[in-house]
Length: 551
Image 1 (cartoon, rainbow, N blue to C red):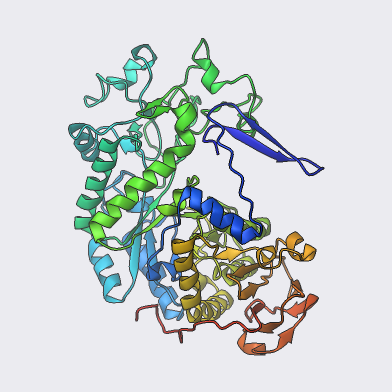
Image 2 (cartoon, helix red, strand yellow):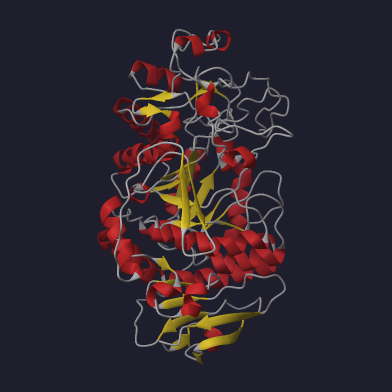
């Protein structure tokens, strides 16, 4: 285990290549002998995952780019009128005053009343929070007064005083200033410091008293900084196309300090973020590697930033609600599942991204972060009716099941197309019927470290075909899901392990025996994807209710 920059490559023979340019190497061996044993042994090292609240397993709806609370209300009403089960409503950064945490914009002042209305319907609300805090904000001032720590430059001679002197609260400090969504410079909380975590908790409590949200979605916490080392790059935010120019964060790329941003070994990051003909740096899209936290240099601590923010955020939500909270983070690290779930990042509205999500949800279950899912229908780019339909049919089997898309993209809530609405209604009623089983799997994960979504070979380790299959997955040991992952397909070429007997759970062919082995299963657009139960096992059921889990 290592939290520095690293690359791992599998070779053509049974070997791997492991490269790192820092940190300490703690190497652990988990003898198994079976895959599920390996995960439990790993969990004994990193800690058991959190147990999400029951409502967090309902269908969730989000979008970046709502111009007002009224626009959000209209979409939610359309989904409800289409009789699609819905439990959780999100507000992205649109709800903020000029994109500042712990604020409400002028078109969102009635959000507290709307959340009360959602609660009256047995629904819940989750809000987004970024770590970057505008340095002339009330929240930042409270942090300074409470001795909260922020990422700093190592030495005074590194500080760009012309920028620092613009803001009285930081003009005599070494706090590193960056640019994210707010219209002025921001600072990045150092969540490794106890004082910072206490201030963050207090900010959550203060805002929760005003707004009454039920969960927190923490984003941009790699941490992301927009325009690092790029004079001509500025954040793009809705309704502020003429935003003022903000001097970007410039890292030391010459002299002895440049060894942190430009190490002798060029990592993969250098090639991912190429800027025209020039290669990028370790600091591209993030903070300068010379930045300092209470526990060390950003060069060594960057991979832990989201982890420590997750710890602080969970503590704040527990204090605010006195309940098991729902916290979702973009940046994660081993042990992070003890504090937060994870979504698979800003994916594309593309069939390829639909397919890789099947692998992603299995991987994170193995990583002991089982509350995981991808943005249904895709985040970036315009989805299509068929893709969105098929993605709902898959996404209903993610533990974290949320539809989310980017600003400026076509509407993709399930009520946008009659066919998608019908498919979403059908598949989420099915999900809700079997939620007692999914909930039980998460409970078992929380007390024993077992997996929730798991690869087929976890149950059938001696089956080579199961080991090679990355297009199907299981809920626990009992349910097998074979989704449609290709365009214009109404059949699934499935593999059903031969060591078990399989029966369909779909209404259209309930109880019909299928397989075993390679088999062709019907999967028309207007029916559930193939979902099968392993013979001799019993699943707990909830006769699904509408419009949500607690109605």
